[in-house]
Amino acid sequence: MKLVKNGKTKDVYQLENGRYLLKFKDSVTGGPGGVVDPGGNSVVGEQAGMGRACLAMTSFIFGEAARRGLAETHMGAVNLDESTMEVVPARPFGQGLEVIVRFVATGSFVRRYGLYAEDGRRFSAPLVEITLKDDERGDPLANDETLVELGLATLEEIAKIKAQARSIAGLIQELGQKNGLDIFDLKMEFGRSAEGKLLLIDEISPGSMRAYKGGQRLQGPELAQAFTA
Ligand SMILES: Nc1ncnc2c1ncn2[C@@H]1O[C@H](COP(=O)(O)OP(=O)(O)O)[C@@H](O)[C@H]1O
Ligand SMILES: [Mg+2]
Image (cartoon, rainbow, N blue to C red; front, top):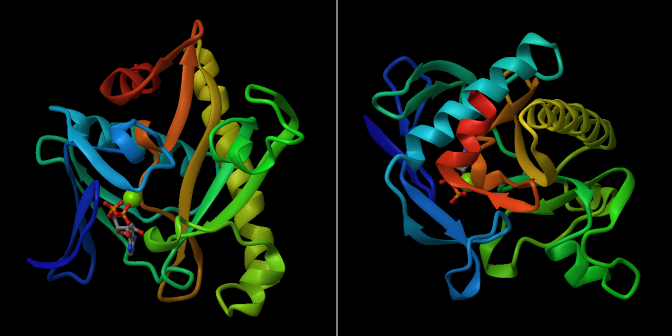
């Protein structure tokens, strides 16, 4: 198996059958000072069982999104004991986009718009943002016109990405609520298949979101457990 990418939370291998194999690792991501943060761009530690939990949660959510016809996903065979998922290789938009859906103002949103938005304010409707995957530049926010001008996506693709992101976030909110979770925000990734179809790719795991239960933040395997229970 050829290693294609050594990522922060996963290693990506090329399989003989043309697919990719994602190996979920036990790493925990965060921001400066080692603070655990879904917006963080560095590995701040390791936690046993993290890879397996992230895979379990991802496969549960991706399976549910596909079953309900909300999105097509890259997901193929899952092996929980090996912490691996076979996936359809996708072409990223540029070097990758992150799609963020926010229900509550917090994190980088408040850092940017603190003049008008206090931390914890619930939005009237889910708010979608797209950022460029660019660690060096702190994953800058890009509006639709910027994405088109930079040649990263067409307006049609952007509209489809936003619509799917909203419905997937709605699904996650619904699944969370069943278990008493309040989801503040979450992020996901999309790519294109060889035929040009939009695919939900990568992972949606504890590190992809901020989730609270009874006012307490839930993270890691505990959060994955709350979803897959
Ligand atoms: N189906 C796919 N096809 C191609 N690339 C993918 C697919 N699913 C995920 N990826 C990419 O593989 C990498 C996974 O490793 P990860 O540890 O998440 O990386 P990162 O350090 O960028 O967060 C990411 O760059 C992600 O965009
Ligand atoms: Mg990642």
